[in-house]
Image (cartoon, rainbow, N blue to C red; front, top):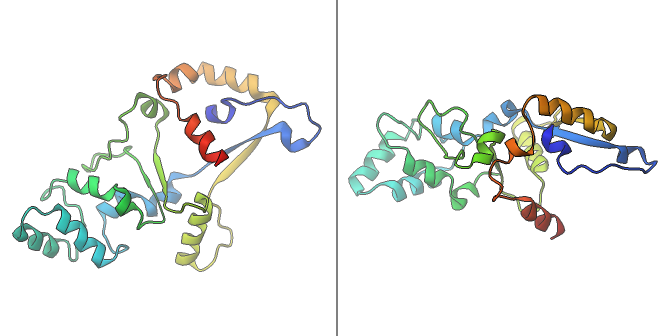
Length: 209
């Protein structure tokens, strides 16, 4: 809700839609199938064998270790924290060259009890915002379009499919919403504790180009 009203401007137009702002949100459970953690924690069945072998070759320090890993991960999870240090694997799975093989995904450090940490919470702002990282490999398709295509491939139909939900809220409620958020300690000072970080120019530049 805070992000929806951050920078909002009032409107005197008689055009009804301009009198509202929209709050869009994605249920995390709807992205669970595309999450890096799930891919690493369960299996690499969705990744080609060629990519799996390539990853192992780049991680293994010797040919003996390479053979051992290929045998180990042939029918099993790619990540076994009891037998393999995961930091190198996490780094490799989050490189652009690797990510480009996955149309859509997301990263979250909300549950690191299983030993997989993406080190997303390395910024005070991200910590305060409880942020996650969402990945879209397409350079010309919006995230929701890629998600719909992936859903269609798996389910054969997009009937009743919704990538995200939304609320349309009248801008006149802005002062009331701010007062409620302030009561919860949600304001610019708390959401953006590190004022040296500003992603808005990146957003503006991408939008204009």
